[in-house]
Amino acid sequence: MTSPTTSNAMPADWARPLVSPEAFAREQALLAHVWTFLGLADDLARDGDWIRASIGTRSVFVQRFGSELKGFENVCAHRFYPLRTAESGNGPIVCGFHHWRYNKDGQALGIPVCEQVFGVVSRALDARLNPIEVATCGALVFGRFPAAHAAQSLEDFLGDAFPILAALARWRSTPRVWSLPINANWRLSLHISLDNYHIAAIHPHTLGRRIDNTYLERADLTYARVGLHNAYLSDGADDAFEKYVVGCRDGSLQGSHYTILQVMPNLNMVHAGTDGAFYSCVLHQFVPLAHDRTLLRAWIYPAPFDGQLGWLARRTRALTDPFRRPIVARMVKRILREDAAACERLQQTAHQVDNAPRLGALEERVGWFEESYRRLLDEAGAPER
Image (cartoon, rainbow, N blue to C red; front, side):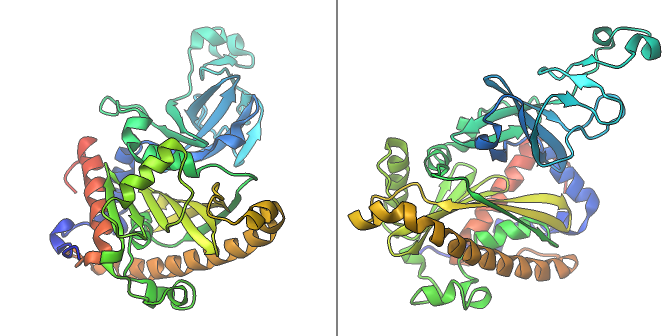
């Protein structure tokens, strides 16, 4: 068994952004330059399609212009009115406050009576939206605000997480989307998703009853560091993770293990068995709203593999999936609500935290996440926290 992680894995003041709005704001300003999951490419299929999202608490939107995806901060360059006020849509970039119109490069070229009110033509005014960088991994869209230190491509940033995401983020029908407000800091939500020690206490009637021993044996599990990211597999073989990555790269993966891939800063990809040989995927993101508020966004869909299914199950899957999907969604929501309730209780005592937690062998990935979190802040030039 792997030896437990010590409390030295996290600094004594790790909880400061959980209780300090100022520390939270500094943290988010730095994380705005980290590749962040924004949404699905499916929602940007047609010319003019757009989606709204958030990077480091700053509202952004991504829009398709022909074969290109462009992203911008969601504020008009004139009087800072939000340009996109819905979750998604289709159409030109026109501000609802004064009808300023922007082109695909974010330049305002359609300013009403511009010469009359500003003394120059629209192009001479040179008003522009603040751009963001956009990249894709399979069907997933990521973005970040530009910075001198943020030169790594999305593929390099993800490393071995890239083929895993690309392989799992495929679906036969549109994923079910669900959201849940959580009155707790986003890092608490990440922590509980990386913790295999809480199952018996928090999920006794959901996850607890589904396994023989509610306290898992660390030797039966694989924890893997994937650059800044990390992964969990319900397989203790020494080469379990390497085989999983190879299967994702060459298309041979059929899915036979419960897997959680955590992608910095705030994304999880879950691949789990639901009934028999059927597997489902849950993509969930914890969107920071304030030091004590988070929005959970989850996309739930059947896993894209069916190689473990018998011939009858494969042939009838199109008929059985519509019945299976709402059952799976109901279970996923229940589990995530139980996690959220625990996080909200943790938030209530966050102001009393003045030392590092004691992390055991089944909580090792919490320490890994915190190490990566601090590294990202340090690389961005974080002030002393």
